[in-house]
Image (cartoon, rainbow over all chains, first blue to last red):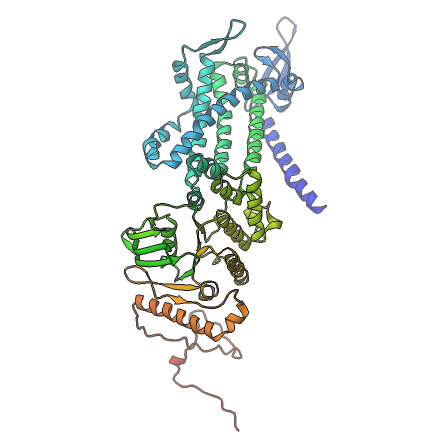
Length: 294
Length: 305
């Protein structure tokens, strides 16, 4: 009973207190609508609404809730291309992330294996990797647009179903999210204990058998750490990509609402992005812990 | 009888430092050889050379009259640190070896072959467990079973029991000796424990460290009848004599390698503090411990008789 109470305090009450403090700070900083009535020269009563506060345009928590309600209460509604329920936007973004992320894994894992297995390969490619790794998604996207400028795959209805911007988006997500997978796989392969390789040698396992029976299982925990970090980056990149190419999705929604001066929805988007990212990370950690061996 | 394994004039060094020098060793089919030496003298290097994991710098290592060019399942090795694959269960670890060595067997035959070896090392109750769930002794049993399941012609054991506690080690020594009794595989057992060497082996060969690399010393034949009874042997004068001879050989060898230094030692001579005396606090003049060598006059109480 005591343990349960302690757990409740740790996992429920303390975070709740922190959330309340943050909400308090938010309300303190946000602006409030102030309605003033005055009588003008003609004797008419004029009501004037103006926003006052430290950050006058920042909506308060309650304003944010009221403005976001339609998106949350009907999370799957589709009222227009850029006016959909929040879960629908999330789903669109997740679909794009999944495609780019899979591409990153498919490209990144073999590169990681080559880096881990061959010293010469590492020496040759490490400088390039170290230079490309810190490049921001915002820089890759225009390059992707240029590279895939001729891309046009028509759907059944005769409209473009996969165009330049789609290809550029995938390219950007894949190339940004690839690096943790590449580097962690390489570390994992290098960390395979010599003893395991000796076992393979004494049994005269073939190269493919050594790869699948010894190298991959041994490197798997490292690889999954890379996969998890890659997923985090892919989710970071999606927002930037959608903002730039204006695709419907959680990032596109954010940018569109900023342009529409609908500031409450920006906060809604940010919170959604954070919650989804958190869920993705937890999910990957769960899978990761199942593959931990030693 | 034709030797199964023959090392002639084998030398090996790492980065210019010679580890083994002029190793000559002949092992016949069915021999139980134990090589004993200090840690760090090159025992593991020697077994790696025999296993084919390393290549000799000079000399030749031959098995059945053909040079050893690489590792192979006919020379099964049991590693000191078990080297079990942690993501496989006991059965799967052994199965990996069986699948590789007997491609012509049907799956059912392989399963029963694995089962037989699991039972042989008395791990039937733990067949489905992962190495992390086993104790050190059980892990080493799995390792032995995995190696034996590959039906090696020579069984190489590289300090197989040195990571285990003394009681487990004794049990496993007896078990491995029993197994050998049954199938008479040629065994080369590397150890640093004289008792272990003399209890399990028929031939004990010391590895003598030297300034320019270790070399094999004079062989000590051990003629005790099998199966050996640990309790009786440990008390037998013949056993004690052999052990004395072996230990003396090793100690003499060690003495030769380390240059002796004479150094004057001063034993500690601090006198116990007199707790009955009242300590007075002084800020600077802290009382230092009294030493016998510093005493000018010592008062000794003598009881009047």
